[in-house]
Length: 224
Image 1: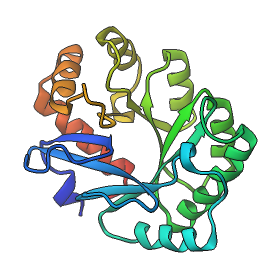
Image 2: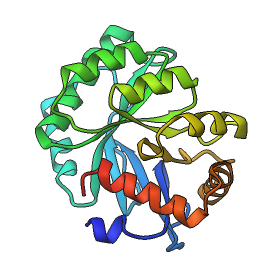
Image 3: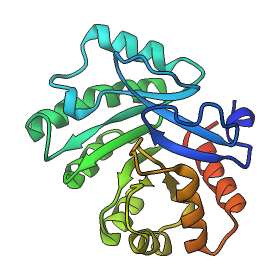
């Protein structure tokens, strides 16, 4: 499958919620699906978003998650995570998160994480699941110091699509390019081709080279 997905000079939207480029062969979109949703997708991840999840995974949900994770075009578990601004109380969110992480660990899948103002708790939980090889915090838009801490803890970071260019510059000047992704998160004002154009200018590299790098990163992250 890696030959099919990631060995091309295409624009990779690492995390989005709907296909906006279904007719464009130059764009690869990885669709984030909340368990129970039906979405058009070529490649997807499956998870339980903390805003809409009030309890740990039930046996029936576990069975469905395993079924979805075993599909060839399901690349990872996610998104799931912790949010200190919305959702259940934090200790409850941590207990909830551990249940899908256990499934991801059993199925040997990487994970896509939503995290808002709960990074210390996320790092704590990551240490409880050392067998999960690859973790990515999507929509990262915080400061460089935290970004470096997360990279040091073994995370990949997918950058928030609506950051000002100077914030992109600050992050990409500091972080190893092998550990980052670009995404739209289906934000109305975000277009993946424009994001690649802007970031390639900041990096002083060709857009085609940036595409190849992001695809290499994805091939490594998804272990394909």
